[in-house]
Image (cartoon, rainbow, N blue to C red; front, side, top):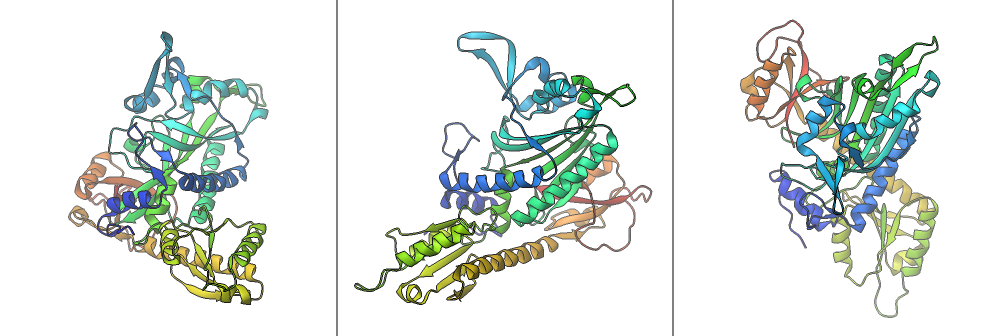
Length: 475
C-alpha cells in the first residue's frame, strides 16, 4: 500500500505521488517534460477526447489535421505571435546531414501552420463560417518546473480555429465555445469560471482572451483552457480574405479554442482524495469493476455470474473490467480505489446464487443490488455516484471564493479573492504583488458568490470604471 501525502497541505506532492501510484503516466522518459502515456492513462485520455469531440462537433466544427512542422517564413508573419512564443520554440535546422534553407518550427500552436492554408480555402462568403478542430501534439520548451499533465513540453492539445464574416459572428463563436465547454465541464464534473484576461496577460496576437479557471485549494487556481477572439490580427498578415455578397473584399475575423491534457490533471486534483484518484463516470477508463470472490473449496464459482453481468453491462454501453487476478480481495479493492474506478461490484457465491451484487462506489457508499434488473440497478448506482460527486464538487467550488476590500486582506490569502478593480494595469500589478499571484481578470457571466455593494478600486480607490475581478495564485 502507498501512503499518500496529505492533499490539504501538500497538494503538489500528493498529486505527483498519486499519478505514479495510479499508473496514469510514467515521467521517467529521457526528455524532461515529455512523459509516457501508460495504458491506463491513455484510456482516460481517450475518454477525455471523446467528450471534447462530441461537444465541439455538436456546434458544427469539423476535424482536420495539419503537419507539425512550420516554415520560419510563415511563423514570423505575425510578429506579436512569434514574440510571445520565441522563448518556447523548438527549431529544426537540419534534415539528416543537410542544413535546411528555411528553418522549421516544431508546432507550439497551429495558427501559423493553418492560416496560410485557410487563405486558400476561404475565397467567398459562401465558404464561411469555417469551423475546424484538431487534436494533435504541440511542443513548447517549458522552462519552469514540469509536472505531468499540468506543465509539459509535449502537449496533447485540442484546438479549434475558425474564420467568421465579421466581429459579431466571431463574438458569437466565442459564446458557442463557452457553451460547448460547459457541456464538457459537466461531463468531467469540473465547476469553472470563464474569466476575461487583462490586456497584459492575453494570448499573443489576440484582441481578447477568455480563460477557463478552476480553484484547486487555498488561493490556487488552474487554467484548464482558453478561448481567443482575434478580430483581423491574423487574417491580415496571412491574407485570409473573402468576397462579400456585394463584391467587396473583406478580411475574416477569427477565433480559437484550446484545451489540453491539463483537463485530466484537473480532474485528479479536484476530485482526488487520500485514497487516490476519483474519476467521474464519463472519464473513467473502467466505469465498473467486478470482483468475483471465490468461496471455500467446493463452493460454486462466482466467476460465470461476474462475466455474464459484465456482458450485460457492456451491452448497455458501460466500460467494465472483471478482475480475476490472484490477489486477495482487499488488495484488489485498494488498487481499484487508488485508480479511481467509480463503482466496484463484489460477487461471491451467495450473490451469484441470488442474482445480486454488493456495490461500493468510489465515495464509499455501499449497497446490495438486485436481484430484479441487476444491470439497471448498476446503472442507477453509477448515476447516484455521479450526482454525489457533482454535489461535493459544487460545494467545494462555492466555498473557494471570498471577497477582499483592501490590499492588506490579499496578503496570505487562503481562498480565491473577488475584488473591485478599476482596469488600470498599475493597479492590477499592485493586486498581484499583494496576493503573490495574478489578477486573473473579470468574470464572463455571474460571479461565483453573491457580493454586497460595489465600492472603489482595491488599489487606487477610484470608483469610475471599476468592476469585479478575481485574483489568485495560478498553479
